[in-house]
Amino acid sequence: MDHLVLSDASRIVAGILLLSIVTIEFGGWFMTKIVRGQVPMTDFQKAFARAGHAHAGVLVTLGLIAQVLADATTFDGAVGRLVRLLIPAAAILMSGGFFAASAGRNVTQPTKAIVILWLGAASLAAGALTLGIGLLTA
Image 1 (cartoon, rainbow, N blue to C red):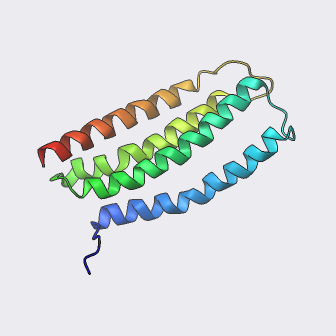
Image 2 (image 1 turned 45 degrees about the vertical axis):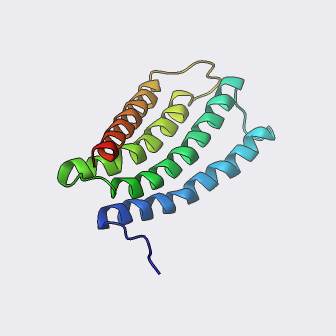
Image 3 (image 1 turned 60 degrees about the horizontal axis):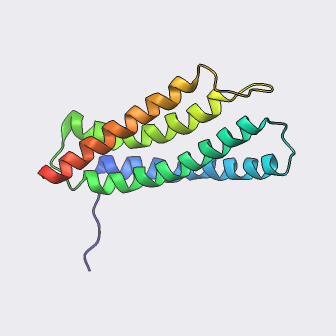
């Protein structure tokens, strides 16, 4: 029976991403405390907490898929490593940006830490574009 063979780089990043799911689970538990009113937050902070948690889960999943797809390209060396890391980096930066931009007491609008979110969006765009082009030209 044929089975999927990942490059070492994709296997390592995928393993790290799978381990990171435990932190996302912890975030889900914390979200249950937020929605039950056990953690004092403004409506803005609750919205950003939900967005940060959701982005983490979705982008880690996309990062896992990207590892398999990266192995289907002809990228190697520095570009191959970069492609494998840009989408997982977006998972950290975007979700972290939501949390950082809403941290503090009684925060009702994003703080300057919102820049972390935008860096994550740039990382996601660069990763998706590079991987997409790599797949179309392989």
